Image (cartoon, rainbow, N blue to C red; front, side, top):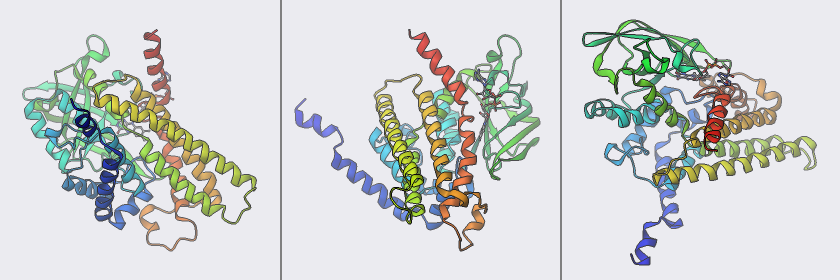
Length: 406
Ligand SMILES: Cc1cc2nc3c(=O)[nH]c(=O)nc-3n(C[C@H](O)[C@H](O)[C@H](O)COP(=O)(O)OP(=O)(O)OC[C@H]3O[C@@H](n4cnc5c(N)ncnc54)[C@H](O)[C@@H]3O)c2cc1C
């Protein structure tokens, strides 16, 4: 192959700059002040659906709602670098943080394990934003030890009859669909009796009860199933083989990139610190401690960014690193929590102020706006080392892999 052709196939810095400019133009036009405010005020894991859904639909209109999917199903075919640019620009512009249960969690398993009919049935609604999904994995008593789950599904003709409960179900109050792990057999190892069902949340017998988090936000729920008749066509893969699908999904749940959001958060903290210490002398001890903390955090964000880019580029070349999602989740979570601790330090006594996000927009604030976000985010982020598998469980998985390799 002539050298010029090979060189043309590799995206240049100029291509990257052109792509970045295109993304910025789109964000300038599509991100309304209300959407940006919702993004800035998001203290929970994801932006609430009333702002998240319109933003997702705007992305869908642009053809950018499912960039990682295969091109034939609506993916963009971007390079690893372009994915990173897109995510970074969205985070820097304070776009709402989108809930991943549809696009990044259930869609990859439908693509991998669904029949053609199931793909046609489930994927378009995720891509265009008509459907909003929630994840029914955890139960009271079954979290880290997920295989012990008890929610039961019994086959009855063309239906499964589901009884039991799921807990910590993020955004279930807005979801019209759920993917659910259910027990279809009690013989053999616990893992061997689990099946994977996808169904509608408006079926008779489903009740959603809110759980209010320590920050006062309503993101979590407990969902109860009382003789819910689920069409058997909702079974993904084979009966009693749901555990393999469940694990495949967890890799995608943990496999995202963390640094775009972390870097945007760090930039925000730098601005907060500049404003907070504007009147203090440069040698002020507290000011210096915060500056050192921010510089240290920047190094850690850069290091994680390099790792994520390497993993993403390898994955797109077909090379997988089995524990990369676990390492990324662990490091990303620790950094995320570290940054929110810094945010509370910078906000100082203002961090104690409480004003619901919805109301805050209606008031002239007597305190820096970011201070309102600091404590809510700090409290919500305590959960980051628990959801999607606790940090201890990630460490176990990394250790098992490394020990097995030696
Ligand atoms: C904000 C939030 C959102 C969530 N969203 C969802 C959702 O949408 N859908 C869903 O299904 N679930 C969701 N979860 C549930 C989450 O997946 C579980 O909380 C998590 O798997 C931990 O399970 P657990 O809470 O039962 O804790 P446990 O498993 O009881 O763990 C308690 C403690 O013991 C430690 N531990 C447990 N086992 C081991 C071990 N083998 N080795 C070392 N330490 C161990 C844990 O690390 C933890 O510190 C969410 C949780 C949170 C906090």
